[in-house]
Image 1: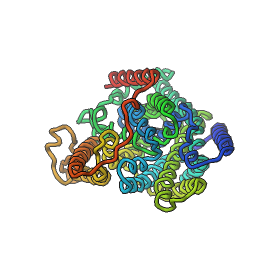
Image 2 (image 1 turned 60 degrees about the horizontal axis):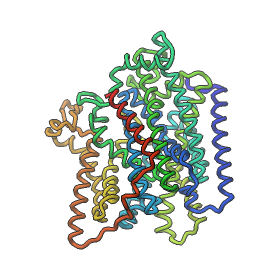
Image 3 (image 1 turned 90 degrees about the horizontal axis):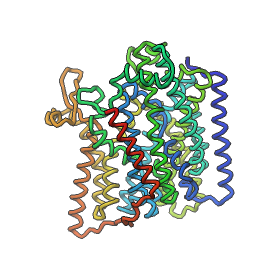
Image 4 (image 1 turned 60 degrees about the vertical axis):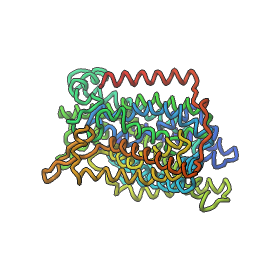
Length: 562
């Protein structure tokens, strides 16, 4: 039943008041000091390691995980957790190799890095691109999926859900990064508490259905009754191979997805760019530990929903079907509607916290890039600090209004919300990552090479997406990098899994960038390097111990569920 009880609303109100008053208190504390643009956009020297780590997770986990990843858990099982677990390993690489470069060179935005390393043309192209991507794809999809989930649970009108979420996010974002960072700590508390409560009750429901009780017993029953949902690596004959193509999740395109997202993404790196190196690394390490926990919160409920659906529990079959077809993304909302009063409100608060935190973080990054990389450099070069902060706040409001206008028309296909976002963001990731990684660690990389990666990477991704439907690339099937797809007319053609496609595009971009750079260097072009020395990459003993623990846990998990 799509309603919340009085106790559920009371629990949600407590969550709302805690976040609102704490955010107001942080904002009032901050106003006691003169606010400049770095305070507003980066919370310069204000965030602690635990606030950075919590903010990273709060900004990352949203409806696309709660709804989309749970839906993928329903459809394909634990394998979708590779996005979360590989992210933990990726965060360690970012902390060791990426963050020191940014901090040493006083980089505060990703376009600023491109301007400093390459030139203003590359920086401006990417600034505009990131704004479009963040608003049209990311902000819009977070808003739409979040509103859809809340509508499914509460029965509140879908448009009203979007307005409420957008308004709540705007209020938090207008306070600046410090307010976002510290309120994210509370958001993550509710996210984890409510998420674990949902997982516990979902597993207990499974146990109860089979005449037992307890979450541990429920988990054991999942591994028995959905054994096929507990494999991390898919073979080519698996129907989900196109989404997670075998070993690519360990040695291929999955690394590009994660390294680009966690290391070359303003939305994420912004949390650490205002801190010193030790604090930033500690915060990222904390986020990596939290990442290990996320599949328990967002994937296991989806697998539990699959077992309950298969067993015909309650009205699962009716609630998860539309026009005779199962909709995996409805798994989490349907599961929440089975929770008892009070706990449903806690889970509802957790979901809302995840959505609002992600919206606020994304809106702040949009404002940062527009204000510092477009407005300050092109529109009003003499803008003073107060003007920059004002422009940033107006940008937050305008971007959210655009997202509200676009969201109802968002076309999320049958892949599900999470896979939809991953695939279409993946058109841009390989070229961007090639441009960053060569820019970091090869001083001879030239601006024209970076320009090729910017434009050529996207063009190649589009080309490889659609060529297999025109040309029968049989050699790809033999090489293991594609899968036969049956067309409506009965013909069989080849499609390259998008993670493999990202790997191909990255390699092509890197090779062409190398050739362009070598050619231009011979002609006397001098590339702009960065200030880098080997001592930057040394870590503290405590960080090294934490990193080894995470690596050990990852090896154990992949060994068990291979």
